[in-house]
Structures are given as C-alpha cells and as structure tokens.
Image (cartoon, rainbow, N blue to C red; front, side, top):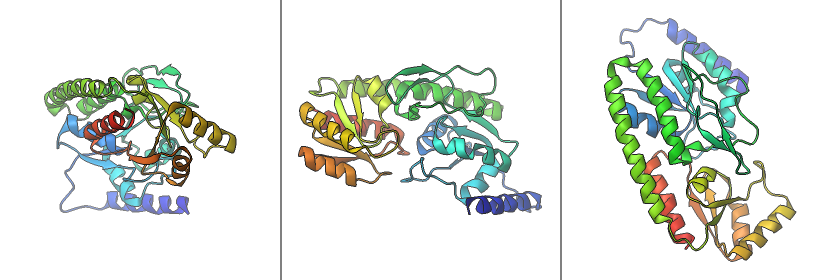
Length: 301
C-alpha cells in the first residue's frame, strides 16, 4: 500500500512538472526532517524560504510515513536538511531522491560529537565540500537527538549556513549576520540553563524515550531510559528500574507526547511518583529548552 501511494504521488509530481502554469510558483522551498530544524533554518534565513517539515507534530519519527502533501513540497525544494540519524531518513532517503533528483541533500549532523545510547562519545568525520548524506550512514547505537544539545546545534547551524549561502548567494551577508546573532543567543541560553540547573539535589532522571542524552551530557545529568533499544523493558529490567528510582528518590517519570504513557504511569504508581509531559520535538525550540531546564529545576530539587 505504501509503495502504491508513493508511485501515485510521484506520478502526480511528474504531471505537475510537465504542465505550463500561467502563474508559476516563485517561492523558494527548503525541506527539513523535524520541527526544531525549521526553527534553526528560519533563524538563519528569515522569510527567504518556505520551510516544509516532513514529521508532523505529535508523530513519532520511528513510525513515520510522509504524507503526499509533504512529498509534493519536497519535489519543489532546492535543499533537504536531514537530522542525520533518524530511522525514517534512512528508510525514505532514496525515495526522496527519486522525487527530486536535483535537490541538494545536506546532513546537518556532519561534525557533531555523537554519543551512543549507552553514553559513549563518537566523533563524526567532517565531509569536504557538500555534506551529502551517505548510504548506510546510520551507525548502530548512535543517539540521534542532537538538536537537544546547544553545543551540537551550533554545528548543525553552521552546516545550514554553508548550504543556504551556496543555494542563495545573493543573501549571504544576511544569512551570515543572522547566524552570528543566533550563536550569541545560544551562548546566552546555555548560561541561563547552567544557572538554572546548578545545585540540584539529584542529577538523575527517568524518561520513557531516551531523547535527552545530549542535554544530560552537557549539563552533568544522568538519563535513565524506560525504553530498551526502542522497546518496552523486560520484566527484570522494569524491576531494576523501579528499584533504582526508589533508591535514588526519583519521583518523576518524563514522557514525550509522541509515546504511550501507560507504562510510565504504571512505574509512577510503583514509586509513588508522577508522570510529567515533555516534548523533544517542539517547533519553539529555544523556549522549549528553557521549559525543560525549568522543569528539571523544580522536579529534581
């Protein structure tokens, strides 16, 4: 069924491209994988591009299938910025290429200092020239949530700046100025969060889906995940998790809105705690980082 839908949409795109329009679309399009990337691109480019976001709000990137409307906008895009290691990017990348063969695909994770889902650091080699997404680019065990680190967001934004400057050199001075301003904003944000998280009584937290590994690394916190390799924990793992929560005095289970809360609620009942919502895919990225820090400030005290 998925293949049939993709073929139909591709056919529509080809027919549309062959039609002569009286009023041609003069807008410039960029496609991104997730909403935080839209925030980054707009900080650099302002209103110079229409931004097409593949992953809608509230949808898990692990089960996502792009709707026809997104594929049509993808076909008009001059650039597609990937986050680098999301499951759906690997699954759909070649199909995206076939929809728009002339589109420049940029891996915004190039140069990022990755961590594994077990907390180990990995350095991604920087590519020379165009930062093209490679075949089989996803590494086993890599934590893909690099937009949850201010440090790594700076790297991603530099990759965005380089690409939009090549795509639209007429506005390169504007993009460079916007980039510099945003970097200063990121530095201020980092200082604000560090101040908020100083003096916490506990620096361990439990979260259903391990999306805050980079945030934890940057601010000397320890993330404990309910999920194990993308799956619900086995009974023995669940018991160990509950025992750890009781021993550490952890009373809050954080759950992203993209995931079912029932298991987290069950754990919260066992430890006499509560479930707190959290969104790692918010479009309002900067204020969301402050909200996460403020939540930790009050819940981990």
